[in-house]
Image (cartoon, rainbow, N blue to C red; front, top):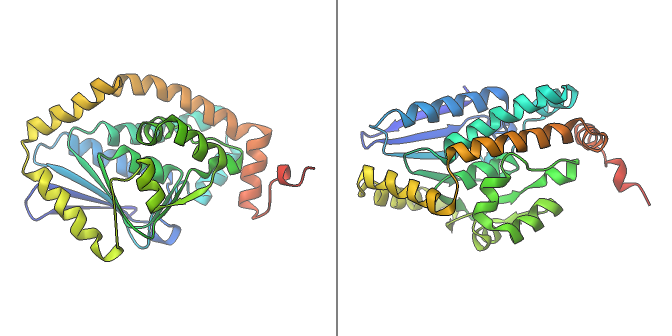
Length: 264
């Protein structure tokens, strides 16, 4: 089962755990679909007060699964666009969920995994976690998750991390606004429980109103995001089938350097 769902001790806390530890909880179509469905069910369930998202094992999420990437490399531009729209639906469901969400970042997050962190209302990470928007090193772009990550860290920070594909530490993620708190790994559950307790002391209707207020003041909502998703899906689809994207994906899958690193 790629996603574990646990309703905790009658308080209305829904724990969702990405459960593919053997591949560092990387995305494939099954995990994307399961998590999207779980979030959409949660939104319709007023007994759910808080959603906590985490990963099984030592990682939060490594982003795209290797076999999934292999399939997308061989797919048409139209198929890639439809695939990207499914990921966009997941991110939209998480970001605009009525209930408050907490990312329990138990380990490293890359690519789409960073997107999940950015989509949560509150993000708390273990101090050993590492992060990266590494798509540019594959000749791609973090198109689908870019709106969410950019809102977290701001345009200037996004321009660095999107362009360079560098990896960065939990402390750096805290400094640039991706995370709210960084704690030693052994204190992660306690830190998450503290913020969950604070959320449970608030009025459910007030919290939903506060969340929607933040979106309104920031100038975006679910409908505007859906329109933007059409653009980002087209962008990543075109990059995946481009000569550079094909070379970058092939190099990654073949565990070699892409050709552009060998050019003088």
